[in-house]
Length: 108
Image (tube, rainbow, N blue to C red; front, side, top):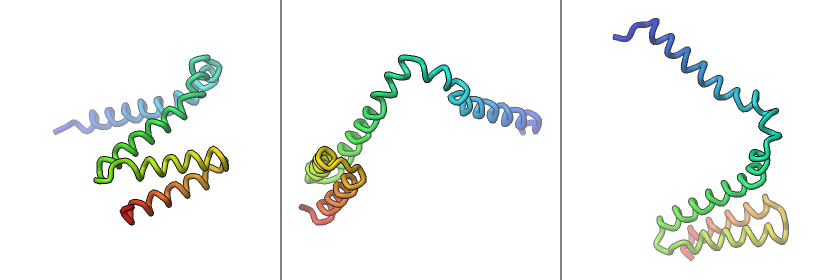
């Protein structure tokens, strides 16, 4: 049986470490915002993460269906074209999603 005092101390230590890890970015933000590496990451990291998420989602969905990656690629291409010409993210995402769902549900 675990000693009650030991369990409380462990839980408190875990809570303290968790709080410190959550608070660290806010405390260090004034120094990190001016660092050149952080500025460079801030320029390219969001686009990189979105690209990786998109590739992962398209590849995963393409393996689930016999028709291959064509519906996913068509929807992505449509979203890219709409965003390029219309420059309305909400419209691009909604139209791309609707086209993808339509293609998947009606086996085109």
